[in-house]
Length: 278
Image (cartoon, rainbow, N blue to C red):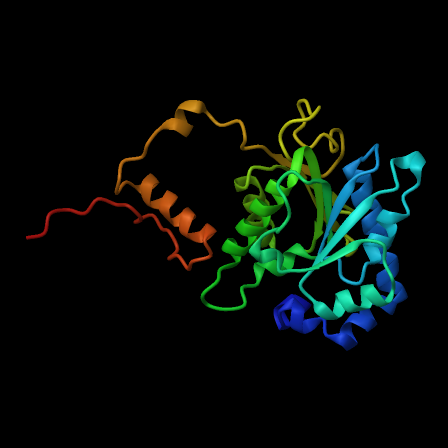
């Protein structure tokens, strides 16, 4: 069976009928509940916080966020962001407690910088890997999303995104985009090697009381891969690449991808010096 994101863009796939079907399915409610509780566990919030629910849909995760017990750091306030007007309409009919925002996460996160304590996303960010037209690349959409999310989180803030990558390339593309945006990133896999496997991308904004382990929450856990590109060599960072060199060309290509432009694939011949023409 084909994946939903391969069939239609999310705002078209989740029409009125599909949105009601998704929300009323007891199977989906159960899975969503387990993944939301897991994401909140990884956020490890000890005080009431303002949380962004990315791809909030009809508010299934939001209800759980609102109901966190004070003994576990709650209750939390939340803002829900989704591209599907039908999903948000169902959320309004269900009278959820969070504020709702109709927006495309592939265009960024339109919130005030540093205004969020944390963010969660359940089964949403893999949709960014599917460009809807030849004028927009998935790399550009991912870059805009993660840069916007990074800006909106306070120093020391965290985000946990559960996602279903189609393959290893998508997994690397998503985590790589988060790292380029400035996040410390770790991937946690629950039930690895089974059909119930779930991936959680744990992201941390620099600062706060985090020491050593860049995510601050995955230390000692199994099946966790961690990348941290924030501590780069200062000399490398300051070095100016010669115009026309391979490094200069690659940097320019990366800038174009971040703007959502289509860029030709690089190869071993990129930036190669050409011999004299006779």
